[in-house]
Image (cartoon, rainbow, N blue to C red; front, side):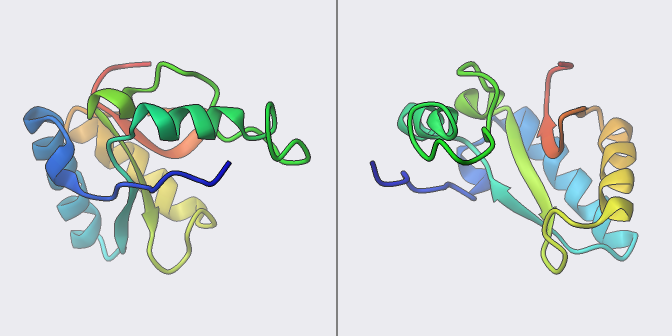
Length: 120
């Protein structure tokens, strides 16, 4: 099975989440970081594919997602990473978590890049 396309557009997100996410991105930039949206709203097809990694396909890999009920499906979650450092910057994710809380967004413990509207 081929990997379904990843959506990075903020346009598909719910208005409330999109507004708060933009504030978060602006705050991170003001601190000198380089945030980019790696993934925004997900199709059900992509969620199924991601859930299958390490389970039904790519069995040697670590699972990517832990649920079929991701807030990505509703447009109320996004993955934000550092453009330069990707997933490899403790400082970036420490600040991302703090700034997310400041604008009323939430992170999840198992994924520092995952930002969502609802508390986990």
